Length: 119
Image (spheres, rainbow, N blue to C red):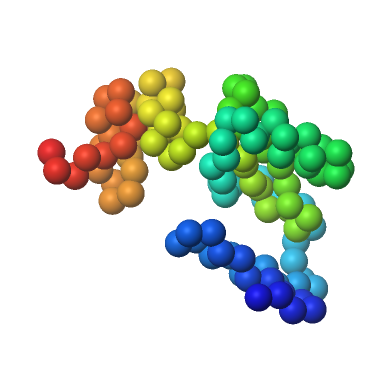
């Protein structure tokens, strides 16, 4: 649905409500928190190229070629990532997060990155 001051988008079980707000901030918050969207490895450079051509602001340079970080027009931090949550958490666990927790504050299994609640 789209109206003069709002749009509602749906992808699978995720839905977003975008609403015009005269009081919205005009820049990013100083924290790292952001929303990430999974895209295919082949689509990531195409999306990044289109965003760059449109004049989008990048809020962080990626250390790896599998992510592209940018701001939406209201300053929300977004990421396109050519992988899924499992691959991202696994990579972060290997890098440095041996004491990290996910979800219900259960410790991550070393080298896994995803909690298997059946254990």
